[in-house]
Length: 401
Image 1 (cartoon, helix red, strand yellow):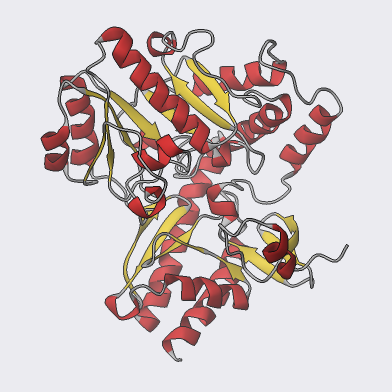
Image 2 (cartoon, rainbow, N blue to C red; image 1 turned 90 degrees about the vertical axis):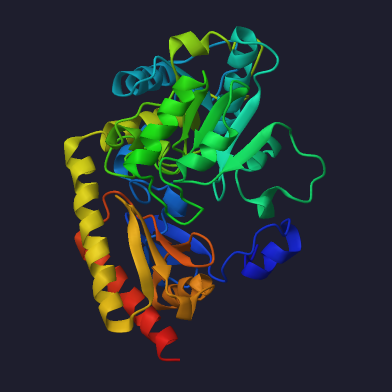
């Protein structure tokens, strides 16, 4: 069978519009397409390939587990799932873990747990969920409604109710909405899809206090910011604020599908037998790969290296900006970096992505005005040099057009 980009249009549902190139092989931070053209990957599958492509520890774990046990139903448990859960609880605030297949499923579980806890403990009136405009929490009907982007949630008929949205980094807007009817506040500890927006210290501490004052749970969606992405194992660790529930996915599996919802024993008991489930949640293959990823990421060498690479990325973006004056702001944490375009280039982030791809560097957008970089946490320094040199050529091609 001959596989081309045209085949996508013939056989795939048209909810995506992928690039013309089809990658066929990856190693570390480099990818090769069908024509054997090489690319430097600063997209990382949107913060998924935390250790790059085909990392030997992950490949080894997959091969080893693949010759042992692939799947069991949840009427049984398995060793990789239990080892991974133990390592996650040892490394975080959490006591208990629920495994799922994706970030959306992890967030769905977090939201259902919050509602269940509130109804069990406080009564049927306490069901309001507050999240934030420009937030993103997945594509299930519940999570996409909680996400603060109507472009993603409109057009599907009546939405799940009792969900409202405040302004991120605006404590007063949250104060206006929160009450004793609020069961949970959900946020990303650094907004990803919304433009790479870190929270202020005042805001994140204020959110925690407002939740405490109103007997509401604080849910951190760390699907994108977790698994070492910010230079901490989870971003909350650098904020001085603990959530009650945390959702993890993306980098947790390093490219193998897995999600996890982390919480305390006191809250976990409200998801009693039969109240929630996931066919592949806790799958031995996924958990074996995720365990290898966690073991590799959660070391001082890797986490400190993330912070070193952040400084290099930002410095190179500043150098480009000094020449071409295209960015009004360069921000982010760790290997989650955003460059917001100036008004002169507003709305053209996708053009920069396409130009970079033509030069051999894969990058992303975070909205129409922000260029996003989510490379491997261990991207080699020489790959940063090459990839950013190619990106600079792309910038020049647009500025000088």
